[in-house]
Image 1: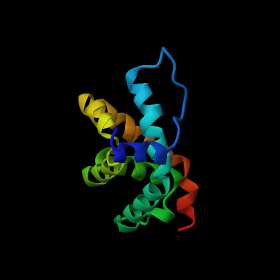
Image 2: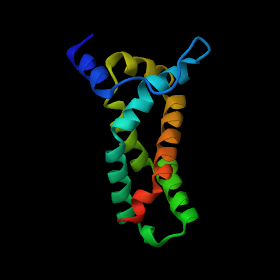
Image 3: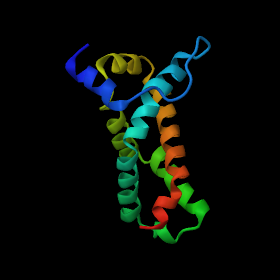
Length: 131
């Protein structure tokens, strides 16, 4: 294992979620790689979305709860630039071995990581009420 890979594994922390013999490879990757990275990068994702909301053509902070969530969904699931930025932040913390695994099933794992990011942002909507 390279020095970078060792550093990343130590820096990210432990697996989040259960892993057992019934766990699928995608779930294993999710719990061992994606969840720790999303947790580690949480403040950065909040800041990035906050900038996105401030630069949007609507007054995000005065929208209804439903419209705020819809804007979040649009940003994460449909805005290519925003989505690619977030994916890059996540992928940048993969080890080389994790990247090799990711590249085998990137499309499915991208959907999984964006879904997880969206839920993380939605669960912290109160953060954006104070901006």
